[in-house]
Amino acid sequence: MIITTTDGIEGRSVTAYLGVVSGEAVMGTNIFRDFFAGIRDIVGGRSGSYEKELRNAKALAMEAMTEQAQELGADAIIAVDLDYEAIGGGEKSMLMVSANGTAVKLG
Image (cartoon, rainbow, N blue to C red; front, side, top):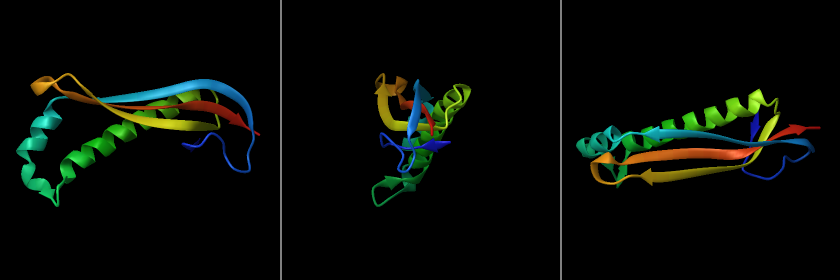
C-alpha cells in the first residue's frame, strides 16, 4: 500500500476514488503521569519515552487507516493528514492521534 501526503503519485494515475479513510489512536492519562514521573529521560529538552508513545500512537492510527483502505480494495492512500489533539484537561487529559486520507485505485 502506497501512503503519501501528496494528492497524487508520480508516474501513476488515479483511476478511482474509493472514499475517505481514517484511523485514530487515543493515549490515556497514564502516559502523562509516566511522562512526568520519567522526567529524568529528558535530555536537551526532549523526552524519549514520550516521543516513543507518540510514535506508537501514530503507527496505530496509520495501521487502522490502512486496514480500512485495504477493505475498500485500495492500492494507495493519498492526501494523508496527521492530527494530534489534546482531549480533556488536568489529570483526565488524553492525546488523540488521527490519520485521514483518500483511498484510491491506481492505473
